[in-house]
Image (cartoon, rainbow, N blue to C red):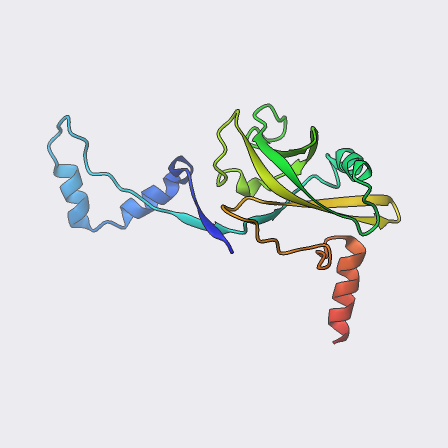
Length: 186
């Protein structure tokens, strides 16, 4: 079940301006006519909550982190239609050349993938800290070789996975194609 994530208000200055523009003229005049003092003036507070899934598919598992995913799969003996549930650690990568706010997942010292960029501002993970997360890794044999894709649970409390060994995601190209073809026939 999705849980709200608090957003850094610095990212939403435009929302603040929009909210201020919604004040009535009388409210705006009250703010403008207030005598200067050392006491802080009126402050507009916005409480924004975003509902994002707690079960997140990682990006990069089939591109930049492909070799690491394959090594992990080999170490654990998973191949065609493989499944692995394991603990991992997420951490920010401020020196990442593509995204200084990137959050990477590591398992057994291997960088397995990244949280999608839309999550980087919602996950509470100060730079220099590491957070343990449960991970699911699924593999499939494709004509080009073994492919692995991973999900992590970033929610609070016990993980409530959408997928399992028996109920696999349709992320692999031929599985999606097969599913779409079956759906069209119906």
